[in-house]
Length: 475
Image: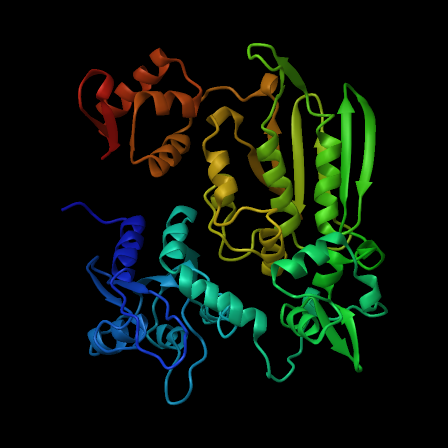
């Protein structure tokens, strides 16, 4: 029997998730669909889903307390489609605590739970207990999200309108910024955002409550004031407080620096200003083969825009003296974003453009999504994965920056294909055609066929079908 991979277990947990049973409730709260798989040390596994044996029981409870009661599961690996809960009313025990007490070795999580009682806390509790945590890939996250759409919408609403809790000590960007007032907020984007979340006025009781829950504003010594998030997103002059929250743009040609700009203002404004600047700097040519002449850029403008937004949203704003850098020269476009990937995302996942959806700054991501300025669940990286291999950005880490180097058309990388390139392709394309392989690696048909035949002879792939209908699959 074929040995199951991590992806197989993830898909199995999603199959289990779809069996979940919605419990009857007196309120309109929708319970999540959750599937869990526990992989024993001998490779066998046991599955569970929410409500499987009793209405309302969490999937992890069913798995650990009902199906594996007398079993020692120390060192096992668990795959769960939703972040484990971390708060339950006594005498109930949270799912994250059950996993810790079970001494599992690693937990794969499908998506974060946006409910305010969880929202990253379950993941954090597992990591603090020494359990390794990893996330599902974007394409599987999208499946989980679509199946749980009703639950997620309710969870986001609870996150927005949650009231009556005692104030917690907030730090970092969620803390109120000293020496600023509500008057320091103000932009068309703020008004548009308020309309989207169905709030009429910043000064209304409803508006103040909503923005306090979102941690865009806070209260200090009886006065309302912007938080770091609020100032960065909607402030008039956020660089007065966050000097590093800017973009340094440089255009070079030959050995000379032709133009240099520093773009400040609120984060959304920075994105727009930079977009307007680099459109005129990126090498391009006119396509005269169509009835209407079109400007063709030497590198996809959509990919550049996605990487810039990614840098703004996910960067580490706590690193002093480290703005985002954007450079155009004769050979490359270079984007530098401060901060190592947020745990548990690995640099290798970003290098393969297969990183799961997980933000260092979820509120900034939330606002960008609401304003239709960012894609959700890895759609941007999905676009990049469709590029030929020699046109994909090269990703490196140069402390404290993640660096994306985008080769311009005349400087695309050579076609030397390393074994890890093949492994990455097969991971993304379990079945493929000759044309897909040739396009991905920017090969001629003859070169593609020669390399495919080599993989067949080495027992890496097999072929099925005839002539133009032939397909190849990873063994």
